[in-house]
Image (cartoon, rainbow, N blue to C red; front, side):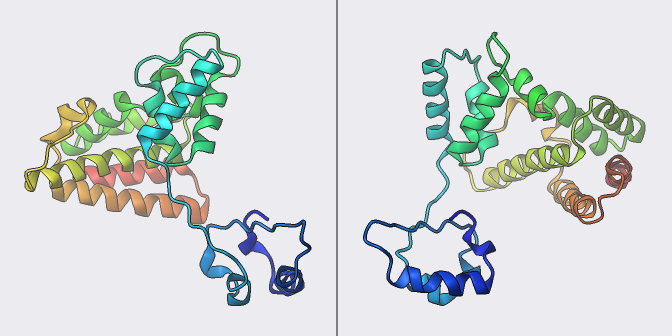
Amino acid sequence: IDEVHMLSIGAFNALLKTLEEPPEYVVFILATTEINELPPTIISRCIRFDFSRINTESVKNRIEFVANEENIRLDNGASELLAQLADGSMRDALSLLEACSNGYSGALNKDIIRNVLGIAGGEVIFPLLHAIATKNVPDAIEIIDGIHKSSKDISVFIDDLSMAVRDIIIDKQLLKFGKINKVNKDYVSVYDELTPELLFYISSVLEETQGRITKYAINKRVVLEMAIIKMCD
């Protein structure tokens, strides 16, 4: 029973007797990401197994194995990007691989993956961060206009931008403690322009913006443009 926490109290009560005395040939598997929403009477009658996210390297290796078995060609970096997008889920990783390879006979690269999945790459994100850092509103608005015209999902773009900001913040914090700085070569050009204060401010505004879009379902482009102007000012 997937997403078992969605069952009503009445449904749980009806299921309880069967869980207490199941037929010998039946095994119930209750799957949920919200264990706290299950009644204690249900939890107490189950053996609990907690599953964690799979590390990116393992997901990447599995993607490459499956791609090789299915004669799907991958360019450098393609499997790593798919693994990152899967966020620890092997099922999602293989679904993304299938979605990007369907109807395409050439070698999959990062650009093709981003285009198929509607994801913005560094060629958009980092010029936008540069425009914000230098308070260049016209350039920032022009970049947002390009994103809108390319039919990329604004909510997905905000997530991508937030992740890039998160990566830079973590790199800068690790550097303070003498850890090896793993700065992505894509954002070296804007790394020094972005102070920790500005990065945290951008992250906060993006979180607020995503919340407004999700909650009110209003014009995503307008909300993002206002947020970008706010960041520039």
